[in-house]
Every structure is written in C-alpha cells, then in structure tokens.
Length: 450
Ligand SMILES: Cc1ncc(COP(=O)(O)O)c(C=O)c1O
Image 1 (tube, helix red, strand yellow):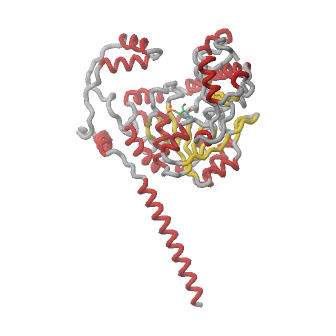
Image 2 (image 1 turned 120 degrees about the vertical axis):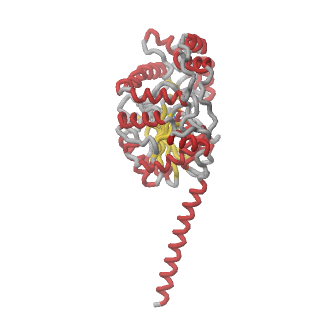
Image 3 (image 1 turned 60 degrees about the horizontal axis):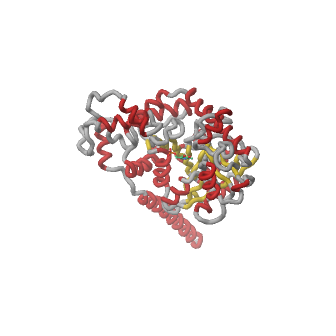
C-alpha cells in the first residue's frame, strides 16, 4: 500500500514543479518586456485628460514661424515640385490668431480626434468596433506599426513567419529585433498565388507571429475565403498571433476585401493599416495599429519611446478626411488603378514577360523574365539595373526568398513592377504615359527596346 502513496507524492510534486516553472516563466516573459510609457508624455496625457496646465513637457503655446507653416501647406496643396509648392504657399492667406495647439506634440497614442475617426471608419466600412481609448494607436505608417508590434510582442529568437515573396520590411524588421524569420512560399498557379497548408502548418509550429498581407505585395494576390480560414485555423492551432497588413484594402480588383480580423479572435490579432495607399499620401506617415487592450498597452509603450507621437497637423487632417470619406470614394481607388494594371500587364506580355496569375489587388505585377531576350540570363539585380538604366523603367529586383535575403540560395528570374506610376491608360497616350516612371519596357520606344 505504501508504494502507492510514494507515487502519488512524486506525481503531485512534479505537477507543482511544472506549475511553478510556468508561473515563473510567465513572470520572466513579463519582466523581459521592460519598455514602458515615457513619464513626461504620461503627464502630458494626464494633463489633457484632466484639463490641467501642462508644465511637464517642453512645447510652446505659440505657433511656429508663419513662413514654415505656409510653405508646408503649399507643399500639401501643390506637391508637384518644390517650385509649385512655393508658388502655392505665396497665394495662401496670412495667419490670423498666433496661438497654437495643433503644431505641437499630440497625445502619444494618437490625437483623440484621429483615434475616434479611425474607430468610426472601421465601424462604417468594415463593420467592426475598435475602442479609441484602449485599442487604437496612431503610428508613423505601417512601417512603424510593424516595428512597434514586432518589438512589443516578441523576444529575441522568437520565430516570425510570413509569406514569400515579401515586402522587404518583414525580414528586415524581424532581423532588427533579433527574431528568426520563417517563410511560406506562394507559388503561381493558374487561378492565383497559392500556398501549401502543410508548409504553413510546419512554419507556424513554435512561431510567435504570422505577418499576413492581403492584397499582397508583390504578387497582387488576395487571399480567398478558404485560404483565410486555413490561416485562422492554423494560427489558432499553434497559438500564433496574426499581424495583418491591410494597407491595400481598397486596391482590390476581383472580389471585395475581407479583413482577416473578421475571423481571428481579437486577443490573437493585430491590424496594421495606414493612409499611405488609400489616400495616396505615402509621405504623410500616418497609420494605426488595432489590437486588444493588453497588446495595445505593450505596442503603445514601444511606439511612445520610439517616436513620441505622430505629426499632429496631419493627424487632424486625416481625422476629418476619414470622418467624411464615402464608400463611393473608396471604391473609386481600385477603379482608378485597374486600367493601369491592365496597361502594364499587356505591355509586359507583349515583350515576353510572364505576368503570372491574374492580379487580384495592390498595384504590383510580379513578372518572370525567362523569355525576355536581353535580360533572360541576368540575375534579378542585374536585370533590374538594365531595365532602369537602358529602358528607363525602374523596378524592384525579383523574388527574394528568406534564404536569399540572408545571403544564401539562388533567386529566380522574377521582378516586381508597379503600375502605380502609370498616368493614363488611353492607348494613344500609352507611350508617353509609361515613359516617365513605369516599367512598361518595350512600349516606351526609349532605349534599345526588348
Ligand atoms: C506590404 C506593405 N506593407 C507596408 C508598407 C509600408 O507602408 P507605410 O507607408 O504605411 O509605412 C508597404 C509600402 O509599400 C507595403 O507594400
């Protein structure tokens, strides 16, 4: 009988050890996240909340020099060139009241008006409620949104998965924060760029985050319902948090965008978004991160220490725009790009590029140049250089796989080209239209042609 009790004691003791390890491990993880909100900006935040005179943070009550504000406004209104901006500035009215609040530091997590406007926009456009006070953080574009999120939710050596080919910020930031990148390849099929669910399953094993971008740069793939369900199921299976990159949410051609946030539970989800592409304002650096309260607190702390706050006057502008923008105006974004995409694809095909599966969204064409005579034997970088220097159409070098990014392996003969610069789709003006920036090689008549 006695031996039986020994076993009970051993099992209970082992369970206690495991429990203690989990608790201590958890504490250790919390301790490792040592970044906190700045004390100075915390006082500013509280001063705003309580209507107190703010003697805690150094910023003036007076407006910046009038010339500075006017030249800035000139650039906002007539940004074609520095000369047009100055010309427009000179026509602007003189400043009246010299008092100022909107050219100074704003609330670190985002001007209240913008967080409320983002919340309203999600409710109206995507039918989702995000709390401005606890779940929305204004950041400097998706780029800072990713940096703050990856830093806040990982520790060194954590695995971060994403699809390849990829936007270079993913592996760069993963490396920046000492994490390990793991990629799942999207392969071109007749009906779209597809991934193997078994490979995604394997990549997510032990991973901390999945970075998910749809519509996808650079393939233009928009993940369909079945793919979204697989992504959500496998992330849940492996306890992985999904960070969605939704910046092309309004550049969709074949079917409406459905955010992954409709099926992933909030505690395992971070949404990164910005006005860069939606508002054609990539230089404004205004974006936002949506997450549950717990993750938001961590992300805000990193954001606060990294950048203090977003540009205040621009946040005020974005807030008003998001409040007012109509569904029709948002739909026009894709209508504007679709003919440009068609023009680019047709021109590329004419000179032998394989433009792959139909482009669902975003404004990229990911083309293979195996059959494009002058460049077919070149490396992607040499081919990109050739097109830039000889044909006067710059493009991004081809498919980069994680192993290529890390300096191993071999790239394939593909390159990413953007149709965003095409100014016109009218056939007769096509030659001129593509001459300036875009990569419609062979139709420009410039250079040796392909
Ligand atoms: C997929 C993707 N994510 C993020 C970014 C960066 O966006 P933002 O300008 O908002 O920082 C880009 C920019 O081209 C992109 O293509």
